[in-house]
Length: 88
Image 1 (cartoon, one colour):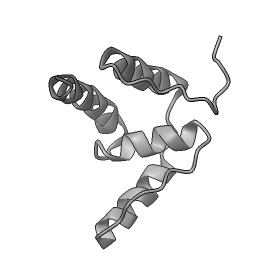
Image 2 (cartoon, rainbow, N blue to C red):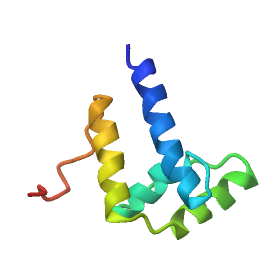
Image 3 (cartoon, helix red, strand yellow):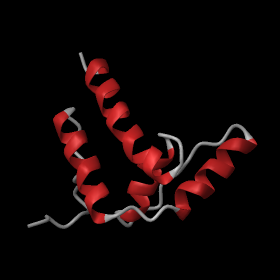
Image 4 (tube, rainbow, N blue to C red):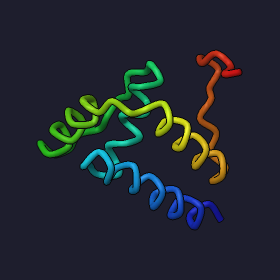
């Protein structure tokens, strides 16, 4: 039941990815970095390392961060974790 929601989420994230000229997988990595985390990215190919580097170079706007979190919430994915301060 979650798959259709994830497909919509990926389509919405693609809009943001297109804005930054990167692939969809790079946006969640950039989001995690923007939130102050150090994502552990699995890399089985050299391309994955280069993609992670590109993601680390993305400076998401606060509006884009809010959009990503809003999209995720609508898909039933909650992005606020215990290590984050509650945003008011």
